[in-house]
Image 1 (cartoon, rainbow, N blue to C red):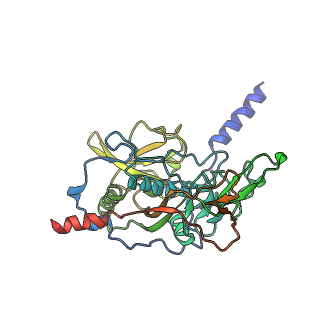
Image 2: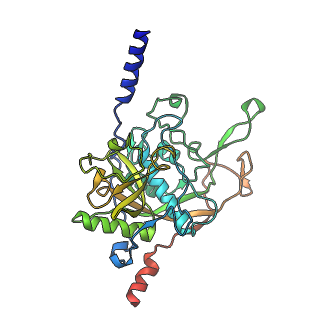
Length: 357
């Protein structure tokens, strides 16, 4: 019995000592971290335009955020960068739709299947790499095309070695008709709901105070942003308070999404969404003191704006063989079409308002 307890204690100790994997990686194919065309919020907003507190998860009692995510199931996958990048992009689409209607959630698995050389894989990637990949590729499908498997072509954890996650039409958007024993099959869809990226970039500044203001203006004007952080101090952080450890590491190894800021006991903090599930932290969120770049949270902030997103789909049959009244042919020459809603950048109307004043 004593021997058994010793073995159990050693096993528990080894589990607690598991080393965190660095999930923030810049891939060789990620060559463009900024693609900016429109005026940035800090060029047309002032500090007076910023409220004392702002939270996209509570705008007059209504949440403008899409659903919560967990990158760690069905097995571990270091895809935080994709979760943060796509959830903040989807949040901005929801905000542009007045926070109404069914959520548009974007396929993280598609990025893992096809973005390996630019965006990343289960072995790490970057938020700006995800934005560049979507921009270069042309679009990202909705998640009903390709649900999250927590696998990439280079991962063998869990069932990953038994599934195909290579970049193919079938692994971009698919549907399956029925059981194979009943004559069913899975087919790739040439027509599928999707969203595009118009612009993306990093938030740069000469000092941290300026950077904080730029981050706030970006969030307030256009929506949540993605942010690289050092997650080591968060592994056993249970929330219930604002993280304020100035001695914590700042080197990035994880990516999250900042959805707003608040004030508690006279101290300002960021409101940050993680991708570790609702069971973690404060319902999947945590708060970090602003202004001191704690955890490195203010040094690696990036954003993206949508170009278009599908509002009216091209209808397909259940088995996917007929779409829009024509035969679905992923190998054909016809390009995918859809009735998309075009994003209007806030600068279009806010700049003119500032000019009138």
